[in-house]
Image (cartoon, rainbow, N blue to C red; front, side):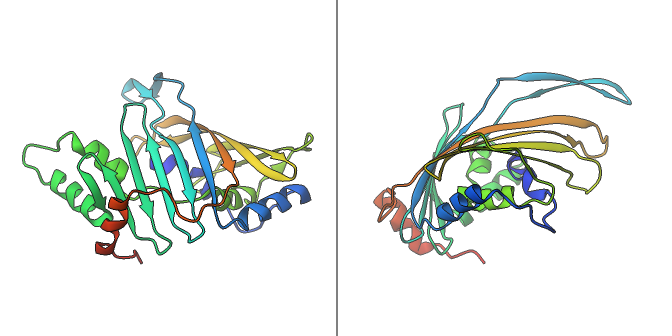
Length: 254
């Protein structure tokens, strides 16, 4: 499901659409902020059963959003703090330094990226199969560190993006695309709300399909999330001492 978060980034980027001037200025303002915070609220409609017709008959699948609720912040030094909460009660905190070193607080304590990868390898090699820890290990493994300003630049510069006539300080962007460059497989509606010329929040709705390998059956997928921005700079992210102490043993990823 990590892949779904970035489906929109697979849209062709050969040429750039031109955002309205007011929106372009607001994006530039956000990009110039060295420190700010954000909150991502993911929609969860609950389990949705879908009947898919295949060559071997009807197959029923159950789809549910597995994305977490997330709070993030970046300090003036470029360090990032992420807190992710899932509907099943799991919470993972992650500290990422400006140089890229990363540590995550897990049910087994603070772990580096390499320690998480090693634990996943151990689970795969267990003769009696993986244990329940494989679930949180997968979620802890190298979370996305894309900030809202980086995501917005990608979303607003896709080739086939169209901008509806703005209503006051609300802008609606639409785009469609395919990971394989063929017929559109997903469509994105992207709504941004400005206040005083500053982006305060944005909402993303994605509807599309993905094809299951071998069977090539098209499975409906969707994503809905709201991102709220707070422009309050901070000297240092609110990470506990234990997280900083774990960092010296890490290496900055290439």
